[in-house]
Length: 341
Image 1 (cartoon, rainbow, N blue to C red):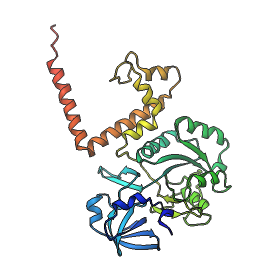
Image 2 (image 1 turned 30 degrees about the vertical axis):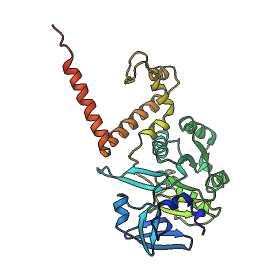
Image 3 (image 1 turned 120 degrees about the vertical axis):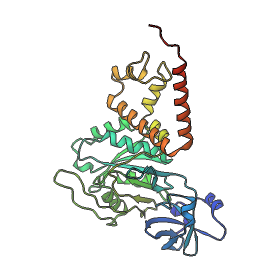
Image 4 (image 1 turned 90 degrees about the vertical axis):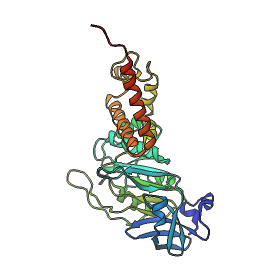
């Protein structure tokens, strides 16, 4: 395959070490990388230098520099879907790299899970790629139009596509988005139909699927992240279902996903308005007159706080600024004249 068909951009060549050839990572296993280059697919060994330059190591979708059968460097990423790894650690986990699109996938077997979609969109906006909401199993939904309308009201500036892997509804529109040389990653919880969607787009069974359960929910099938080349030339990364999606460095992503709430907050009378009943609070006014869903506002506050906490855990400068702010606030309190009773 030509490198351009794999998403290669000529400007990447400037970062390629001398004497090396580029290849794209399609799968990461212990001790081995599966890569694609102009000669086809092969297995290579990741060198220790990969982890020195990129602590998280190579991820699916990365471009690596090969010297023979050894991967010696990860080339700079243009976009990456990143979450905090499961557990108490604050380490980043790169789910997929060098993306053009992030397909946030949910199923239409129940009412849209708006808060969950918003969380995925916040991380997707922070990735540097363009998010698209894909609502699968449209053939099992009694009122697709109403479900899509509900998601569109929250997914501001994001295309929302209802699709059916079984009937083929809107699959051509999705294929057009993931065009030749473009890379998309499917993200979402288990059982929303990502593997079935991959098979439908690929025109054959390349991912395992299982029947939905009696309660209408799907089952977990994908066990590893993997990049697939679609017949039309697009590249699609399938990812396992995520039990939790913890934010990593997504302060800006939260502001973009909740642009309507952020815009209202900027119109409050006081710059430090806490939106808890202060006079001139534009957010409270919008909730009172029905212009803002209180649940959406609550979700915004929750993700804002989560993103800020995570920023303090991983960013030494942010921690220092926060300590300075708290010291300044404490000093101001001490210097206030005491009331005489």
